[in-house]
Length: 371
Image (cartoon, rainbow, N blue to C red; front, side, top):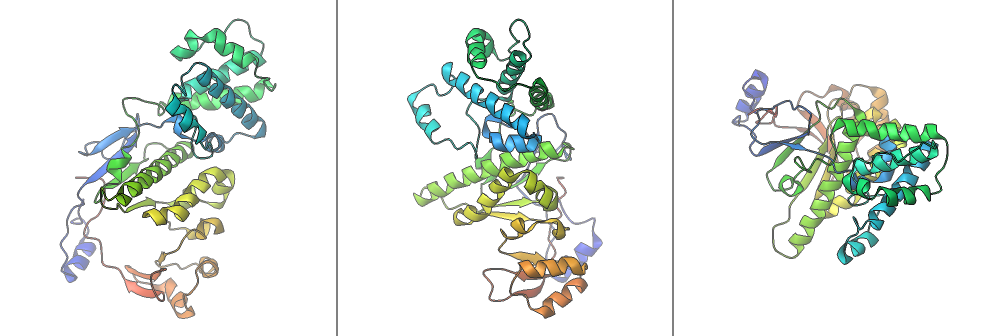
């Protein structure tokens, strides 16, 4: 990970008497069953998603379910929770019963509700609504072992009709199951404690997913996991047992994830981002959006940003919109924005008395996910 292939970068470094060197302590995460740009990297690790970590409301948004399908999804979700509680799968002891009282389903899902269990319940609901003979097949062993009790709970569930909507929900969950990215005990979740260690750089490589749905599922999990870990880090630092960790999450190509249409379709997922932006700064958890198309970021996103680094922008309409969102930059700096040279930028930050035109030193390393 160095700059020797770029003579312009090397010349800029030489003028500033800066050496070119690699980035140390870089880890790469990629989804289980998906390739990575650098399969030979020494600190490469597969990870899977935990279905129970994902808010059912975020899941419905990501799957793009309509109102009728959402009604059936939530009915099946409530039945699945009832089944887990009846079979003492969760909660199974007093501590878990106390934990359940604190559960916020806008933040996370029901513990131990795997994707396969959820699919089994949806399929059984569709079986009942379609009035099909015999019992449906349950793939999860604990549901299969107790299939009579499970079916009693489902049949007493006052299920909404219209088999087409049930089949749509079943099909959406079936597609997720076929991806094989959920609830894999061998891969497990990302190691958030390691990811938030000082000096550690983690790349979440989604180059082989080729699916906005999967990308959004991953982003939802990473945001949730890092936020919870940093809250734990902060609590520990307050006791004096370890130094305060400072963490920043960088979302590249932010316009793809946070466009106006996306956040309108996925308000719950956007609230996860907003929560980090508003609460995270108190716990030294920063959030950085990187985009070459700021015109695609809606006002709701721009309203979360406190500090800006503006490189050359030639589009007068984009500049006019940014003017309305960023205060304190005088007209002279705005006039210079379309003609900035490489490396020049206008910085507006809360910690600065006024925005400045700066020249940014070239990076001594070029991160390309190679050793």
